[in-house]
Amino acid sequence: MAYVTDTRPRTYRAAIVGTGFMGRVHSHAIAVAGGSVAGIAGSTPERALEAAASLRAEAVFEDLADLIDAADVVHVCVPNHLHAPIALAAIAAGKHVVCEKPLATDAATARAMTEAAAEAGVVAAVPFVYRFHPMVREARARVAAGQIGRLTLAHGSYLQDWLLRPGDDNWRVDADKGGALRAFGDIGSHWCDLLEFVTGDRITAVSAQLSTANRRRSGRDVSTEDIVTLQFATAAGMVGSTVISQVSAGRKNRLLLEISGTEETLSFDQEQPETLWVGGRDRSAVLMRDPDHLAPDAARLARVPAGHPQGYQDCFNAFVADTHAAIGGQTPDGLPVFADGLRAARLAEAVADSARTRDWTEVPHD
Ligand code: SOE
Image 1: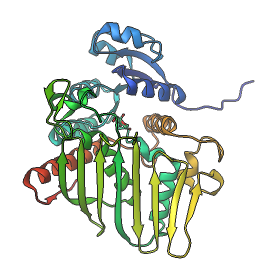
Image 2 (image 1 turned 135 degrees about the horizontal axis):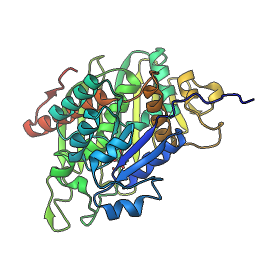
Image 3 (image 1 turned 180 degrees about the vertical axis):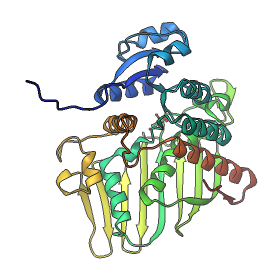
């Protein structure tokens, strides 16, 4: 006699295109979600062969069509300019897709990808994974329940330092591979997604400045920005600002989001994801991630008891698990999909436009 305890669909046979850091994060999350990596492809077969063991790959493919054919879900983890052709090929073959952000280097292409996925009826997800921190869900539940009052102000920053020095380099630096906006596309998109996810509000207008601290890297001119300062207004009447930087010494991956309402302020720091600061006029508190005392959606994402820290990879694991559930016909709350990637691409174009015209730019409606 056997008791069936796991009814998840056994069809999460993944292909991973791209063998860098993100490929490894995806591979781990696929394994935790009960899936397998049917195959991988890299920029060269040699690189893919080298990465095969760490990506848990069953096979290395030279031909993209063959790789897509071998899988149910295609994970696209390559430089940004290659997202669209690979994702569209997978969708055309009727495969589900997980595509890294920014979804595309322009909004028209992101829209075409979103429409193609909808027409094909496939699940098409984008890893805005900070949504999967339990304390982010807790903040969202508190805003939705009206606990912080009427929203008035949001501010924060997303700061890194891995491109601080003129010798620091990466494909993201080149506009033809990464897109015209680098820091905003790479990390500003996360900040804006998190703001809109937590508040359910929408940025309606932006005023942006771009700055390139290192105008030359590795002996070539650089056009993409290292820093963005952004002011914004929202549909619900909030005003706010954020600073995005990849050249802030000592800041490794510090996303700070603070939202104020007429009753309370909530503050979340991605580098301290086990806590949420709740500010009050008379009393303030630091909430711990304790599943026994969290909103149901936050408790759902708690993998281990209070006092046993969980973090970035857990977010990624939960994201892939929810993608898996969506493929199985469920509708997990808060799964970031191509429409969210399109939203980020529209925001990026508004930011670029505002910086160019030195004026406020309206963000087009979805
Ligand atoms: C690099 O800047 C990077 O890995 C981003 O691409 C991720 O989306 C972000 O989570 C961390 O930093």
